[in-house]
Structure formats: C-alpha cells, structure tokens
Length: 232
Image (cartoon, rainbow, N blue to C red; front, side, top):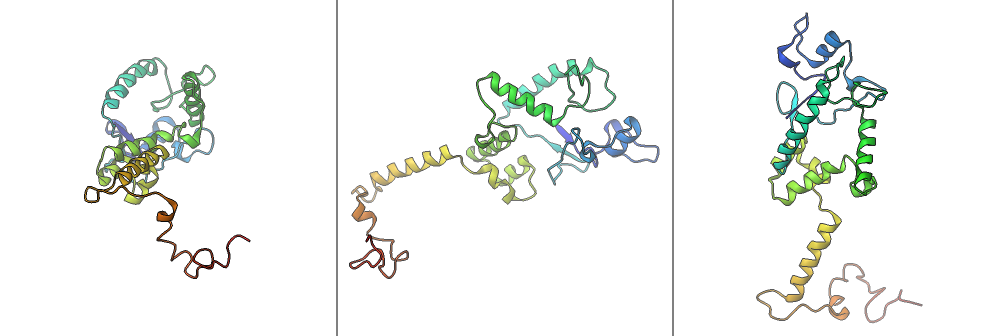
C-alpha cells in the first residue's frame, strides 16, 4: 500500500499539467481547483510528519505486521470501495464522510477521532491517551511488536519511516508491564543463584546494605559507626 505526499508525490496515472508538471499539488490545482490539505488552515488540514520517503515518486509504503493484518485491511478496503464508488465526489481523496451533513466531503481528522472514540465505547473502553487508547497509540504498539519479535533496528526504522535510529526509541520502549515481567524473572533467577554458585542470593537488609554506599555517603554522615546526620 502506497501513501503519496500530496505536494511532492507523483500525480496518478501518468497525469501532467499543461506546463508538464507531474506533482500531486499541480494535479489538485488544475483538475479539482484545490490546494493540498497540508497547506490548509481549517478543519480540512492534514499534516505530513514523515521526513523520509520510500520512493522517488514521493510515497511511503505501509508495512503490515503481523502480515495477517494486510489481508484484513484488503478485505475491509474492498468493502469500503463499494460505498466510496456510490458517491460522486469533486475531489480525489479516498476517505470521505458519510455523515448526511458532509456527505462525500474529504474525511477530517476530527471526524476520524470522534469515530475512533465511539468505536472504543462500543467495545466497553474509554478513550485514554495515557494508556494508548487513542489513534497514535497504535503506532507505539506497532513499534513494540516489532521489537518484541526481534526485528532488526534498521528494519524497524524503515517500517516506522524514521529519519534516524534514535527516532524509534519512544516507539520501541518496553511497556510498564514488560518491565515488571522482566524484573520479576530476573529476581527469580537471582534468588535461585547462578549455576556456579549453589548458595542462593541473600536478600536480608544487612547483606544488601553491606556494599554500595561508599559513593553515596563517603564521609559517613548518614551511615558508619558514628553518623552525624542520623535521626535526632
């Protein structure tokens, strides 16, 4: 699946303007008397965050993971096109509004967000950005699935369409649940002891505090034989 930049992307079906320009911006202006939605200032505005493109024709490629989602998308896409084709629209955008007040108009981000929130409520969930229950949360989930599956960082960079490897860090950081699970497993391994040391690790306070405080309290103000700043 290709997602074209509507300013720099190549116009569809080999189209070119009377001046020989082949960009989608020229296509919108000459054929539909429209400016790109990236340049609009009202509710029709849509941004383009990615700084990288997958092809000189000015598009991104969508990489589905797990790949079963590609089959699901195609099934839904074909069903959607039946409804899209039933309406005459004076624009080339794929996604449109089926609201009677805006029937056939290009779909807006606000309308999508409202539909997404309504969909969550239909399955008993409330929109909550902090726990990933918002549209952008799927991008983070996608990055984490790639990481959990051991996909190479360079491939993840390509999938997320990032300009640098560092950009993927927020999208591949483990969740709180994953961190807790990892620490629980590490604790169990520590308690069992290593294969070379048959004695299990001790977790009593005296053992834990025996080493490691020299850097924190080198002069013994809080610890040691004669602490100066202990409890009064």
